Amino acid sequence: MDVVLLSRLQFATATMFHFLFVPLTLGLSVLIAIMETKYVKTGDEIYLRMTKFWGKIFLINFALGVVTGITLEFQFGTNWSRYSAYVGDIFGSLLAIEATAAFFLESTLIGVWIFGWNKISKKAHAIVMWLIAGAGTMSAVWILMANGWMQHPVGFTIRNGRAELVDFAAVVFNKFAILEFFHTVPAAYILSAFFVMGISAYHLLKKQHIDFFTKSFRIALVFGLIFSIFTAITGDMHGVHVTETQPAKLAAMEAHWETTTRAPLHLFAIPDEKNERNSVEIGSIPGLLSFLVHHDINAEVRGLKDIPKDERPPVLLSFFSFRTMVALGTLFPLLTIIGWFKRNRLVESPGYLKIMLWSIPLPYIAIELGWVLAEVGRQPWIVYGLMKTSDAVSPVASSQVLISLIAFILVYSFLGAVGFYLIAKNAKKGPEPAPKAVPEAVAEPAAA
Image 1: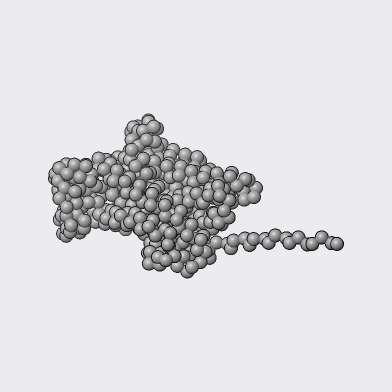
Image 2: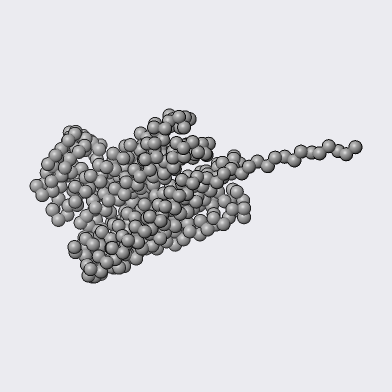
């Protein structure tokens, strides 16, 4: 295996493992902030117990996200030094802002939240949780801004063989990055909602802490319903923009070979890249692809045959990543809509609860496949149209990268096992028991 493929595999391993924890951190922080706010407003102790129960899982997940995220930035220097030298003026600035203005702030605020119980007011403590959620979202903003620039570079000039920043506002307001943000972060909210609903379903099936987990389920249900619909809308908008900025990715994820008007959409296909065709096509709907990406059934859609072979992304992986993501993205609003009608009789709906319990992994699969599509569909470019992935790797021996890749897999497997055990243990254990009411003292009769 050559150094390019090994470096890509190592970065993909690190990124996808890190991204097992990031979405839950983003969404669970908002859900916990909602729960703690309800406690402050109502004074109902059940919301305090909910805050502490889900907060413990949030902290475990956050710690794992931090540990797995640190190694990612080091890889830009160890495995992708030529890339760093070429775009460091732009990419490095965005990562530096993310670390100082968002991640450090989030970490500090988490310390205040952990140790601030009974030391600051209830209202201030809830505000801290909202600030944690905001800082986490700001972290996502800068990371997605950096990725958006790689997908659609703007606001730069080439000087002395390097890409240098000339228009910071163009980078910040890059439409690709904005659409990526409004698709990725709501997807993280869906994942968190399904996580809370799934754990709640587990306890409701066992008839444990029924009031506690019914309330948890309902909060997550509304959250998931809103953002599953919102994500579908932004996904459509993002797809239209991809058609304009990355026609090769669009053609690959739709297995679309011929440039044609009234382009059909294939519900299922098996792409044959060698012969530049689909060996199997099922459920082809004439004109639907043209309508979806141009909102015009007669519009022309560029095919892969009009794109040089050395600039085409892998079609098979792009196509099936996209199809699976869309199928799951269609399932999520359906499950939450069904849940809306069952929200007042959850305990009497064991079939639905079992589905929600077993649905916990589905948003993880969808969001990971979304990143596979984003990155694989951009190939062979590391910065679209500007720098190829093969030109970006460090001048290191493939054996060195292979050793570090094996080390990453072993360490991450251990961390994953520990993380899964800790989260599962705390989720299965359930909340701390409600404090027992102290009986009022009975007044003794006065002595005669």
